[in-house]
Amino acid sequence: MSDRTAADGRRTSTDRTSRTLRTRRIIRTHRTSLPGPAGGPWWRSRKAKGLGYAAPTATFVTVFFVLPLLLVGQMSLSDWPLLAGDRGINSPENYTDITDNTLFWPAIRFTLLYTVIVTVVLLGLALLLALLVQESRPGVGFFRTVYFLPGALGLASASLLFWGLYSPTTGPLSALLEGLGLVDDPVSFLGSPTSALLSTVFLIVWKFAGFYMLILLVGLQRIPHEVYEAARMDGADRWQIFRRITLPLLRPSLALTLLLCATGSLLAFDQFFILTKGGPDNSTVTIVQLIYREAFQRLDLGTAAALSIIVLAVLLLLNVLQFRGLRHADES
Image 1 (cartoon, rainbow, N blue to C red):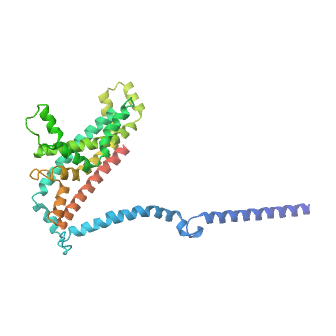
Image 2 (tube, rainbow, N blue to C red):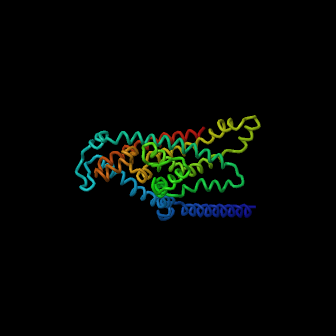
Image 3 (cartoon, helix red, strand yellow):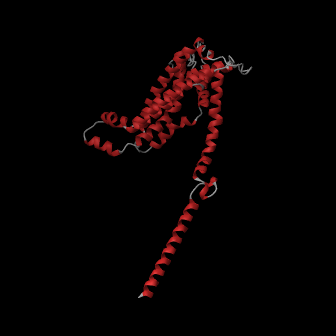
């Protein structure tokens, strides 16, 4: 009996020793697999890998955004002619002298007017196109491609194209109107402030309507079909479905397109620089064109930088407000 007890004790002791050794081996293996100094070289840790992945983007943003932004901030506080370089701090003269520029307030008014017109017309047309190509029917893919195709063309190239189309001497549009007997003389599409504005708006709507249609189309396709079916079973007509279901559920996409469209319109430059050069009589000068004139025509980088800082502050405020609206739309 005693021999059996002793054997059981030895077996139990052996089992305990085996379990202890196995536990230590597991712990040792687990420690070697952990990131950090205890588990191997620091460059193999998850934190180091994350920093490695983020380093190229961080370097790009620092070199091409942060450092230029700091330089622009320094310019805005300094007397900095383009050809003479930094002549020292003159703050806040660059900011206080902005309002003395005769083109400052007209440029702000025109930029805001252009932004409102483009935003309303462009988003309205984009929503209409998205609704037209929402359902999968024969030929819908073709029309989606046709609507989106102008967006593949660069803005400068599109502006040059329309500059040729609008030309009263060599452009086909004026000749076509004369051939149809609608006008007697060549039409100058860019000859008056109103026609220059509307002609430029037409160019922007033609180019970007398909792009915003695509964003809204994605938003429309995210709306469950069951919601529409339930509304139809309750007797709702098309207008009620659009007003009570489509628009509320499409608010995130509408907020995004509004943000992109308003920001792009406030920064308008290429189309007016190519089509109108700010004319006629400086009636189509945008705020970005004014910055260009101050920097490269009047050779005053300090004033141009101050204008840039003001525009950046306005855009940041606008984006913050619209992002809040976008977040509230997602939450609701």
